[in-house]
Image (cartoon, rainbow, N blue to C red):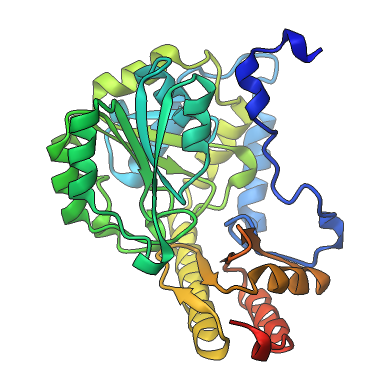
Length: 358
């Protein structure tokens, strides 16, 4: 049957996150950068009440107008500058398709979010992957990148800030200079920016950069990973492009209503965000002070560690029913959980023989 497939598909494999692990055997999941906290009862009760009034026999609003209106109020950005998607992943796919054709060049970094290159590979774009190195603290020389973009006829650049999985935050002043120095669209993925200094976000001055598109998500700081809702924020021309080429009913009515309802509780969301940030800081400090890891100062809801024994430590934690993310056998990306989950993780690590670790 593979003879019927487009040959380009042969180089891909289905996306899997710990697919070989029985999650029913796991007590603590710290592997996917999710929020540790589910919604409180008073919000879920409000959601259920609102869902009872939903017309399940009707297609959803194709432009998610009510949701975008509520999100625009929540972040303080004009609704005309926002497009909604089935997660920011879908929007990335739409945007990459909107700007690139087969053979066009797109620049990404590695390590960074793997789906940037995946969506470009699918349409057979020429993906240029610039390697970041741990020994350089995953630094990027944006002056060199700008020169390369202008020299090599690259048509699109995409990266996350703060970065997933390294957790590094690039200076806004450096990024301002970079965005202005190139004449191509820049996709700036800010889904983790809420966990750090928000003054580093381009959310409130993006209109000064006509080539900039910002990606946002409700999966991280808002804690709605289950419903898959994301947003693109940009000038009206780019937003209209997204709305033109997206599928007609891309965000289902249930997700729209749930997200809209939750956004009516900004005080709760602020309190939970503060708790996530505090928990992560405490976890990062404990791991840095207690264990023979190299620990990177991340600006996210996760901690990144480096050790030649990371693969072994991953298996040790797994045997103790704690799941983290093993990246290449050398790095562990550990999502900050609840205070109790983080304490259990630290307690478990105290039982590992770091005397034999590098």
